[in-house]
Every structure is written in structure tokens, then in C-alpha cells.
Image (tube, rainbow, N blue to C red; front, top):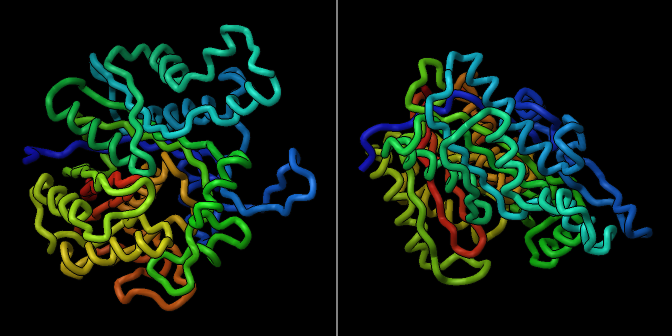
Length: 385
């Protein structure tokens, strides 16, 4: 069982709303989705699709890669934010990077535009370890640096890995980044063919978690970063504990018995040393698919005993794949400081515990769940600082 939590003391975020955590919060506050209509100029005659893509911006001295620029920009914002709140890096700062599909744009260019030929130096930039190493060099951090990957549960996996590092004294601090800028035409097409990606209507029309008429999720991108430490006097939040399990059942479907999903929720509460009555909000995976809605509704009503209210931000940010749980955690954590829960507005009849838009926060804990495709179940327990 956990002896203590860890502090989130710096935040950085890039989303379909723009570059910066303030752009994310201001966008969520509008209650309108980040997505816009995008044309695929490589395939003339195709209809435009609704996507919440991270704008192509940033410091061009960081290279040509959108992915690399986004990763480093989110991390810099988190580090600057933490330092402004009084944090000073310890002797051993580790870096954890959550990623599922890295450098998708550049790999696509490598094969389709460059014919598989590049200078060795340019080829090395395709590796997801390269921007991580460049970030370590930039700050002179010498703790361990590595990538973690657990489908859309990768953000929770990174947070829990950071907590283990800090709890054991393996590092003094952790910079955690989750990056997913993977909305190439091919990736979009395959999620649509799977029957879960919805790009032909505005996201809030197609994605209605815990509501009638939901078809699945809109597609999004994000890069999100946190500075995590046990040495903060001005934290946003504390990560009290959490758990991960695996269904070992199917490549895409959730085990209908929900045995491992239930175990994950129960073990997370035990690890955080809390009881269900202390949980006020479930920040759900909430992709708007029938099986995920059913699974999380069952956990809300049984493990959490209907004490908590539920919400999802995916109708607003889109499903950001490998960065999904991280940007959803950032949304919740920024809400702690503002006394608000950043729920998406309801658009149709829904579960009686579903929040409808931004809501004044009540005392209590937030549970962040993420059920990654293939059976990656994850739950993190968050508390206001």
C-alpha cells in the first residue's frame, strides 16, 4: 500500500485548442470541441473530416518534426511553470515519455516522399528516443529516461511509473510527457473502419459518453507534460495511488466479465488508501463507445457505489490516443486550482450521475480511469493539493 502521494507541480499542454495549458483550459471553458474541418490534400476528392489537431507551430530550431517540437514545448512549459511555483530540480531528474505512435508524420514522409533515403543525422530524428535525449541534454538532467506505451492508458502508466520512481527514491523528480500527433489519413481511416472513430460529423454530435445516440469518438492530438516531485510547496494536485491490470482477452474488446477492470478500480483505491465514499468525481476514459460506457458505468455504480459523478472531456479534446489520459488528467488538475470540474456539456439524455458542462467542484477525490485498447486497464487517484 502507498505510504504517500506525489505532487504535480508543473503543467504543460498542447491540444487542438492551441499551444499552452491556458489555451486548453480556455477552450474547454467554451464548451465547444477543439476540432475543425481538415482537408487531405494528398487525396483529392475526399470529403473534409473533423479533427482536433495540434497546430503546426513551435520553435523551428527544434527541427522539422511536429512531434518533436510538441514534445519539447510541452515539457518546457511544465518545467517553467514548476520553477515559477518554486520548484528547483534535484540532483537526479528522470524523464518518462508516454507514446504509442511516434513521429508518424516523419515516418510517412520517409517512405512516401523521401523513398527511404535520408542523411543518417536526419534518420535518427525518427526515433522516439531522440527528442527525449535532446530534452535531457537541454536541461542537463541525468536521471533515467525512457518511453512507456500502453495504448490510450499510456498517460496513466507514465504517472504510475513516475510515482514508483519517486516512492522508492530512485529519482528526486520526474518530468513526464505524453505525446500523440498521429492523425495521418491512414491512421484516421483505420479507426473509422474499426467502427469507433467518428470524423464525418462535429465531435459533440457523434461522441456522447454516457448518453443516448453516441457513435464513438472524435479524433484528437495532444502533448501534455507534468513535473512530479515529493519536494513541492505549491502543487496543483497529488497523485495518491493507482493500479493497472490487463484483460488478456481480445485485441480490441473489453472482457465482458469486467473482472480485471473491477480489480483495477478496487486495487487503485486500496493503493491510495481511500474508500469509495471519498471519491467525488470519475474523470472517465469516456470515449463514447458502447462497451466502454457500459464498463465504466458498472464501476461507477458498484465499486464507487454511485457516490461519485462522472464526466469525460473527449467530446471536447477528441480522443488523443497515447496522450489521452494525460491531457484528461491535466484538465482535471487545472480544475482543482480553479474550483471547477471541466465536464463536457450534455447533448442528449444520459446517466443520472453525468455532469452537464463546467461544474463548481465539491470536496473529494477524483478517480481518472483509462481503458486502453487491447485490455490495458488503468486507474489513478487524484486529490487537490
